[in-house]
Image (cartoon, rainbow, N blue to C red; front, side):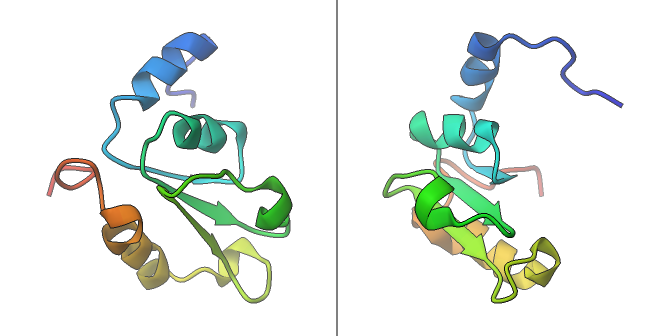
Length: 96
């Protein structure tokens, strides 16, 4: 199912700008979040983050040793969410 059908890019950017933290894969949306200054954890598979990764001091890039998404462990991702980039902008990124 589609959660945000027919969302304009400007509306997506406005929504992302309100995020305390963004966690996503190697995609355009991840780059938009990073460009907006949102603390970003970017998950990479086979693409090279040195070439294609988002930039910024608030960006943490995770890539497994096998260069496969399934090589990223949940604990590794949680660690990046809570300790990378100085943590979320304000509080946890989701209700606890």
